Amino acid sequence: MNEIVHIELPLAHVRSVNAWLLLGEPLTLIDTGPRDDGALSALEDGLSDRGVRLQDIELVLATHHHLDHVGLAATIQRRSGAIVAVLDRVADYGERYATEVERDRAFAHALMAHHGVPDQVVADDEGFWDFIRGASEDFRADRRLADGEHIRAGGRSLRVVARPGHSTTDTLFVDDRDALAFGGDHLLSRISSNTEINAPDRAQDGRARSRVRYLDNLRRTAQMPLARLPTGHGAPVTDHARLVQDRLLDQHRRCERIVAILRDGPSTAFAIASRLWPARTVAGQPLLVVWEVVGHLELLLAGGHVAERAGDGGSVFDLNDVCIPQR
Image (cartoon, rainbow, N blue to C red; front, side, top):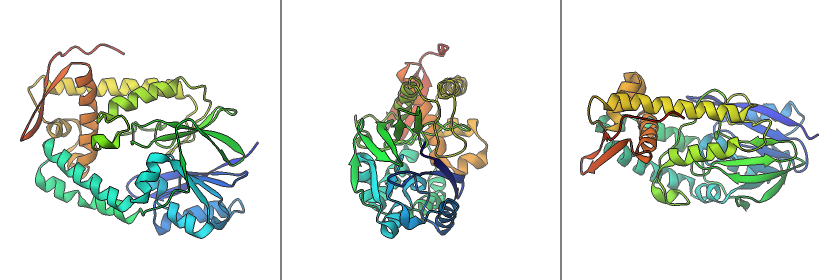
C-alpha cells in the first residue's frame, strides 16, 4: 500500500494547516501551506523526515484556492518543476491570484456595508487582506481538472469531485479503492467550516447562496462509502456520515438562535452577529461573522421563515414564520 504522510504546517491566526505527501508514483503533495518562510521550512523538514526533498515533488494537487492550500504552489513549481493539477476553477483563480484577491476585497467591503458593518470596522479589517496578499502569489496550473475525471497521484487513482460550499472551488480527491477522500476544508473534525460569500458569478450555477449549496453537498458526501477523510485542518474524519449529521444539527441550532433574536424585531446581519458572539470577535472578524450570519439567513430565507427587505441602506431581516421544523 502506498503510504500517506501527514505534514503539519504553521498558519497564522488558525495555528496550522495540513499537507499530505503521497509516497508513490508520481510523488505527490496535496495542499501546500501558505507562502511564508515558516511554512516552507516546516514543509521541507516534514519531507526530509521521509528522505524527500522539495525538488523531488512531481505533482501538486490542491483541494481549493485558499492561500493556506495553494500559497506555496508557485514556489514548489519553480524549485521542483512539479506539475500543478487543480480543478479548473482553482486554475482560473490561481492564474491571477493577486487580481482576484483585490476583487474579493472590493466585494467583501460592499457586502459588509450592505449588512450593517460600520465603516470604521471595515477599515480596521484591512490587516486580513494584507495577510492574504503576503501569503499568496499567482501560480500556473499545468493541468486543469474537471469534475469526475481521474488523476494518478502517489500510486493511487484519485477521482476529482467538485464540492463547492466552503469555497467556490472545493475539491475532493477520492481513492475509491481504499474508501479514502482528501477533503481539504469541506468537512473538518473539530469545527464547522465557514462558507465564504462571493459575487454570484463566482459560482458555477450563478447562485450566491453558498450555505445552501454547502449543506446540499455535505449531504451528498455523507452518502459516499468512505472510511477516512484526511482534512485541511485537524485530525482526519473517520465517521463522516455521523459528523455530517452533527454539522446539520449545528446549522439548525444556529438558525434557531437567529430566529430567537429576530423575535425582538427586524435586524441587520451585523446586529445579529453582535448578539451571537463577543464584541471582540465581531469587531476583529467582521467579514467572517457576516458570512456566518448571512449564510444561516440564507437557510431561513430558503425555508420561508425569514423575509429580507433590501434597499439603498442595505438589508434588514424579519420573521415570516417562527416555526422551524426539526431535522
